[in-house]
Length: 385
Ligand SMILES: *Cc1c(COP(=O)(O)O)cnc(C)c1O
View 1 (spheres, rainbow, N blue to C red):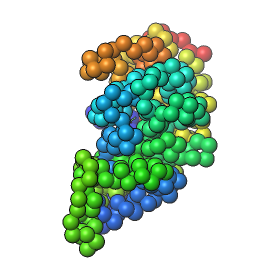
View 2: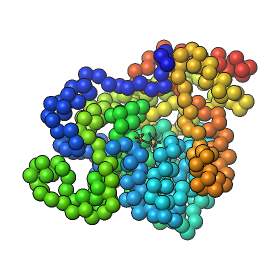
View 3: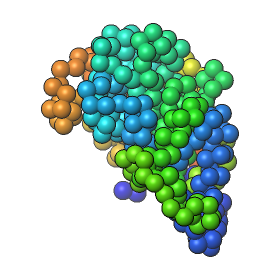
View 4: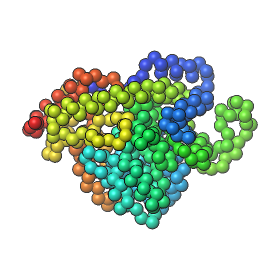
C-alpha cells in the first residue's frame, strides 16, 4: 500500500549510506572492529559495563535466558501483552513461560502484584518488557525479585534511549536486550544488543554468540590466535559490520529522534484529549523519560476496532495492534495448557490501536491522524465532548 501516513518510517540518510559504503570498501564484512566500536558506543550511551551486539533481538533474548541459567522445568514470569519473541526465548531454553497481567489501561507494563502472585518454587526469573519504551515499575519488580531470589531479564526492544531514575532501561536486571529491527527507534534492518553489568554474564554472552568458540575469525585475522577450543553449545548469533556501521550512525541520531517522538506524543495527547475524550492514551504519567517508540491508544468500550482501523486505512493512515496477547495464540494455548486468567490484558488488547509515530512526522500529520480518528469514532456513533 502507498500510505499517506505509514505506521513507522526510517530515519535514514546520507550518513548511513556513507557508513555502509566504508565497510564495503574495507572488505571486512563479518563482526570486527566496527562492531567493537558500536558495542563500546552503546555501552557508553546506556552506562552499561558491557554491550554485546547480536544478529537480532530474538537471538538476544535467547542468549539472555541462557545466561540467566533457565533450564527445562524452570518457570519464567512474562507479560502476555508483548511480541511473541519475548515468550519464545523462554521456550528455546526449555523453560516455561508463566503469563501475567498488566497494570491497567494507563500502564500497559506487567503488574508487580501479578508477578508476586505467580511465583512458585519453580520460578527462576522475571522477563519484563518496557512497552513502548515506558519503564515498568522497576523499584517494585526488583524488590519482589530480590525477596524471591529471581533473575530479572529486560526485553528493552522498545527502549533504546529510555531512562528511569538516572539509569538507561535494560541495565537494572541481569541482562537487557535491544532490537534494531527496521521499525525500531534505532534501526539496522536486523540487529540487536545485549547489555549487562556482570563480567561473567558478558563473557558467557560473547561465547554463546559465536559457537562457544574461544577465539573469533577476527582475532585470527588480527594474528592474535591460530586455533580455538569449543567450551559450550553456542550459536551463530553474530551481527555484521554493515549493520554495526548503520547502528553507529543511528545511535548518533537517537537522542534528537526520541525527543521528536516525545513532542509528537505530547501533541497527540493534547489533540485527542480535546477532540476525543473517550480515547485513553496510556502512560500519561510515565516513569522517567521514554523513547516513545509507539503511540498506543485504547478505544472506548463498544467501538468496533476493525471498523475503526478500516476507516483509518480508507484515508491512507496505517494503524496496527500491539499486541495480540501471546497466551491466546493457538501454539501457546497448547503448550501451556491455556489456563491463564488475564482479564486486563484481554480487555485492553481487544481495544488497543497503535497510531503512526516516527520522527519525520509533522504537526499537520498528527492533525490528520487525530481528525480522521475522531470522524471514525463519530461514524460509529461515539459522541465526543
Ligand atoms: C522487535 C521486538 C522483539 C524482537 O526483536 P527482533 O530484532 O525483531 O528479533 C522482541 N520483543 C519485542 C517487545 C519487540 O518489539
